[in-house]
Each structure stands twice: as structure tokens, then as C-alpha cells.
Length: 160
Length: 160
Image 1 (cartoon, rainbow over the protein chains, first blue to last red):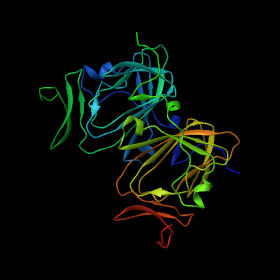
Image 2: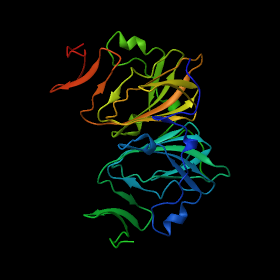
Image 3: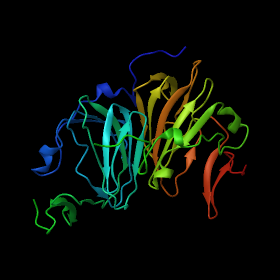
Image 4: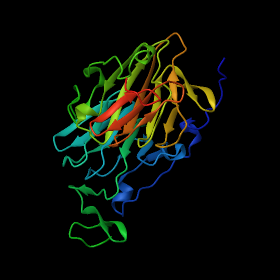
């Protein structure tokens, strides 16, 4: 009989992974993310080709600035609660059990916002691609690369 | 106010995606998978760098033969029910909310089996890597490549 206890790698219980808050965006964008906590699930399993986060988005929280990636596919699956997905086509409500996939290079910027009064929980997954950049049509931000690596810039090219 | 209706791409309701049964394994392995139905969620969203399946594993069903991949990370998240994860280290029960990550090139073969009496549901995600192969330590099978593409072979190299 298989013993029932806390999982060990390559399995894990997300509750055992510390929550991380904050964002890599410069201000004023960082603060705009609001109540957003992520547990990194792929890293403790040793994954390097996939990034996987379990995200709790509190009321008012934003998944990200509205953006698209040049080289990375993204996929989200709503586990609990509901969020509003915003894309170029407008807004739609996603409830638990729904999902969305954002293809690399599709210039349809997306993000999710919790406009409700209770937390939403979702999984977000992406492949990790060297040289990926992200663009933000609504904001004075782009994610660029020079020979030293990636950096945040204004749309006119000046670094933050 | 955001209207509430069936999601449209890049979002979708998995219930709108047809279930697929069957496996690419040769017999006698194909039949061994048992009651396993997958809904492909990444493809309808246009994803090419990620594969995403929502899998319903009935009692007695197997996620796969026990295997490992050379170039692809895999991640699974249990949504409902429970499965037994089998790796080189032995067996452990994974219940809803638990996850596992299998790093590309880690020679720790894995699969999940539903030994219970009710269906289990999980998400499986992998990056898609050209030239990926899979190996099956418990079975007379390997997934190889020649200049014509990938094929299933016996461990001595003969094709199925």
C-alpha cells in the first residue's frame, strides 16, 4: 500500500513554497500590481525550460501590465475565483476552470485584473526563451536587451 | 461593466474542447493506459512552444508509461481526485492541489496511476523541443529519431 504523507521531489505541495510579492517593473508600474503573491513551483522541481507560478490575486490586483512576449508562450488556468481578462478585443470574465493561452509573437497584449471582492487563484506557465522581450502598449515601458542583458526602458529608449 | 458569457480566444472553456482518447504507443503499451481522456488546451490558443493537456484519468488509468524526456520539462498539477506518482524513489500519493515537475534530462522516470475508484483530473504542461526523445526503463520501448523523424523502437533498436 502506498503511504500517504507530504510529497517529496519531484512532487511538492505548493503550501510548502514561500510566497513572493513585488514586481520587477519600475515605479509607477510596480505599485499598480496591487495584492499579488506568487509561489514559484517549477524552480524547486529543477525546471529550467518552463516557468510555473501559482498566483493569488487579491481584490484590485493585476497579473501584470498589459503586455505580449516575443518568444515565450504563456498559459493560465483559473483555479479559484474570477478575473477579468483584458486583450485588444476588450474584456471578458474568466471563472474557475477556464483558461487562456497567449502565443509568442502574437501582438495581442493581455493581462488579468481582479475586480471582485475575494481573491482569485490561478496557475501561470511559460516556456523560457533566451532573448525574449516584452512590450506594453498601454504604458511607457518596454523590456529591451543590450549586450549586458535585459533592462526596462521608456518607449523612447531611455533606461529607467 | 464586463459582460459575462462564454470565453473567446485567447481564452477558452475546456468543456468546449473535444476529448481525445488513445495513445501513440505501440501495443501492448497502448492498451495499458486504460481510461484516459485528454483535452488539448494549448493548441486551440495557437501555442507552439508549450503543450498543455487537461487529463481525466479514470480508475486504473495510467498517465503514460514510466518515462523521462531528454529535452522537455514536464509539469503536472492535480485538480481533482488523487493519483499515485511512481518514480525511481518509489510511490507517493498526490491529491488535489499538489504538483510535480520533471526536469528535462533528469533520468528519473515517472508516471501517475489512478488506483482509486473515482476519476482524477490534472493539468500536464511541457515545453516543445525539437529532437526530444523519451526513454522507458520498465518497458521494451524507446522513442528514437532518424532522418525521417521520430519512431517507436524496441530497446535493441528494431522498430515497432
